[in-house]
Image (cartoon, rainbow, N blue to C red; front, side, top):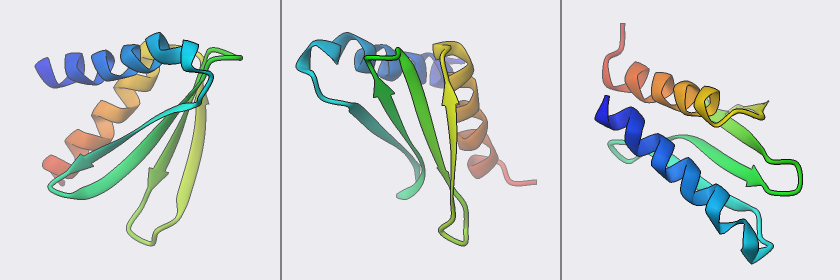
Length: 84
């Protein structure tokens, strides 16, 4: 649960830095492997999640809810740490 809380804190920090005028972005990695990158767009108060797969393909998803964004990131991290 503390890992999910850490993800939420990173996303909230992105929202709080909206006064800089720049699009905030963060990478989420496990053991040096980049799983995804998240961008925060303050004008629309939305997050864009870019998910990377083994073939270096990028899938993009847009979210307007910080909790749903955090859960998606958490799921990606858990899948990498505990492969089926």
